[in-house]
Image (cartoon, rainbow, N blue to C red; front, side, top):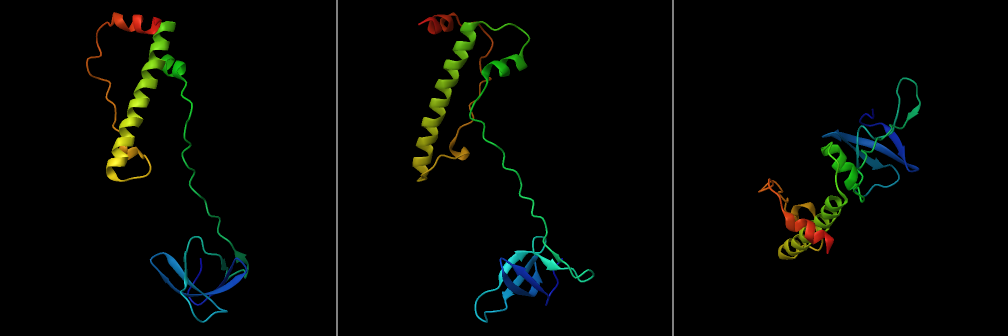
Length: 148
């Protein structure tokens, strides 16, 4: 780890560590007297090992971003939730319901973003759609809707 008053090289520039504070090394370019010191996290700052005399560049592990899924496999979701067979009309109705729900959610989120003066829709603009109200029953009109 870098120590105060030691030298390091970053991007072909030589720096001297003037102080270590709050987990950061304050590095001053030795070729320039003026200007602010560069702040580098001490865990990420290259240094010369005092025992071996070798230049050590710490490996910086960047956290993996969670990938955004753009395709939803409705059939696999259905199979995970039930062992019963699902009719084609039920799958088609679910597809229609999802398209309508997503369209409504985005339209409402757009309205919310505009009302806040934001130029981009974020998760904070989206209402969590609850589907657990009046879910037990039988709706014959859904079969007629999907046939049309």
